Length: 597
Image 1 (cartoon, helix red, strand yellow):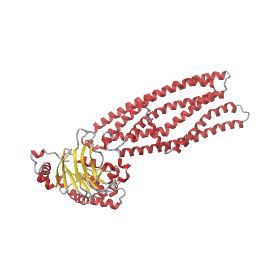
Image 2 (cartoon, helix red, strand yellow):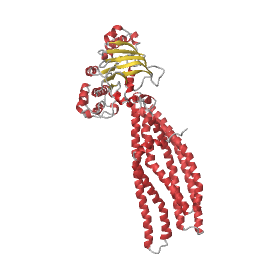
Image 3 (cartoon, one colour):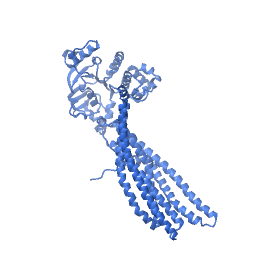
């Protein structure tokens, strides 16, 4: 069975894009290493030849040579640092973009089992760990490995006898690095997972800060975050302790071996077997080798942490959303407007597979028709829109536009033909103009303002401090619920999509605004195929057809008048709502009727 690919191979395609920078960095690294390895030789020449020279001119020449080596080392080190740091920045920037693009294209099933805070941790913290390794640790590791190899060769050339002693202790140093490195890698992955948990808890609380404060749960949320943070801290302590033991052990072994070698070298100088310059050269190479091993032991922990992060990133990049069969059939990339049909659709949400959301569901919406979906909570109304938008696919049956299944079209093409106004509109941290333009990015200012006027949003937008350029805050926090809904309606009005989906689009509006917007929506519906989910039945009385759902099935269909004559669930719901609107007290029997979403 082939072994799985190394986690860091996920970086390979992004590194290839910036190969010239990598080549430049490796060239500078090699030149800097050669300059470093030349320093002990220059130092030996200064001691053995320079001090025995008969003229100061000769001494000056040797010292100038030593200075020239130092200049070369400084320049090539700076070039290496710049090129490898820039390489790391660019690779990780590409990686973040790919990761974010993957997140944007994953379907609803993935987000049902994921937490936003954890995904943000992968997008930020994990990629920062990878960037640390690419931009600095990898460079240090390569330089240290190269210096260790070069120093080992030159040690053997300078004094084979003393080099043999150093070679004897190398296994004692390498084995702890490998053993502790694996432990650090496991502890690093655990530490990153705990940190992601803390980020997820904080993200949830801050996103719902008004709910937290309204229920006076600040202390409760702080305690939850404290527990997650302590768990992350304990994991980090275990990881740091392992790295500390590794570093201490390596330093003890390396410098203990150096002390032994220095003592043996001193004996050789006294016995006349080595010159002072040769001993100085040997000592410097030994210092370089020891420093390289020490650097490797330190960056090895960073590399292991980056491997843990790369594993998590690779898992996310390997996630696949719904297979888009339409992308392989470009001739079908254009949707021909037609009737919308649900044929024998069977669907259950992945989180509750035992409970059908739609059960043998059949529905036909003719082109240009306005159909309202009503029924109690959990009847399956929102599920109809979710399947039409292909946030999910049915387990059985088909959804068609015209004569073709929507599964035959690329998801992007399908959704470009639909405009959605959700029950809880999402606004972005931009201006009012930017949020409306989200419906059609190529719209000009006059089209945006016309859509706002049609949605009865122009007046309150112009009253904002900077009008259409006013910053609305995160999730539109500076607007009321009704104002946010009118921005969302303007966004849908701006779209040229032939299919309009309204999920309780006027539920947050007052009666006056609702009447005005209803007129605008009726003009819009006349040109589009429209599916409406209604909370207040008064808003759908003029629909071409009203479809009543209960437990995932259609139990009645017709106009408002026809359904009132038939009686049943719709008539009960209507009488209950209209009685409340008139201020009458409903009877106990009517109070048992399920609420409409």
